[in-house]
Image (cartoon, rainbow, N blue to C red; front, side, top):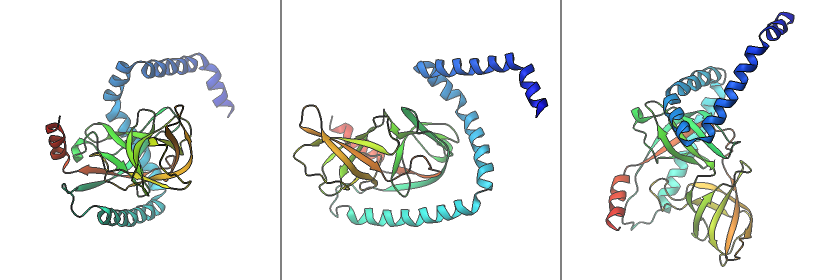
Length: 268
């Protein structure tokens, strides 16, 4: 132990330089969009490999619990899919078809204003931007960047995130966003003040986008208030997912996404 102390004392100038340099580099990347973009593109493979190696070590010591968790998630997910199919209108003009890709979470942040996750699937696995990401408990986010073997997810705990959701009871819909405060609470906006709300009401995906199927769980109403103009609600939604402990996720591919986009473009 004394030798360790002596080493730090002897190298204190160099260690201080490394700490200050790392801090300055971090500030530069975070404060400039161009630098941030370049850094993300050039380092995605390297950081993904590092996260993968670290994750592999931790997974080795948690195989039993992880396998149990995966089995439980698969069972719940199948039940969720069956329920969604029953909830879809029989006379839908467009039949939604989805493929699911199981993935591991190599990195997850939740304590910053703009949080992301890193998954071990990339464009070599047919993963593309704008694919949704869920767990058996609810939504996680939307993929915004991919490399060969990894993808980055814009978390719902990101102040730039916007997801179409609705009240399960009444089908009134609005936009889910995050105020950057609690990792357990997001905000639902654009719900008219005439809508009847109750604490505990369930919030689900609306299905009005090509990213998420309808009726995927999001959370429940914890509290609500009127906005400054007193005509719209600001609803605090307690998430079903514990965003701090996510290790496994499913990437959703809408196989009709190109057809839907073409249809939407024809209406413009």
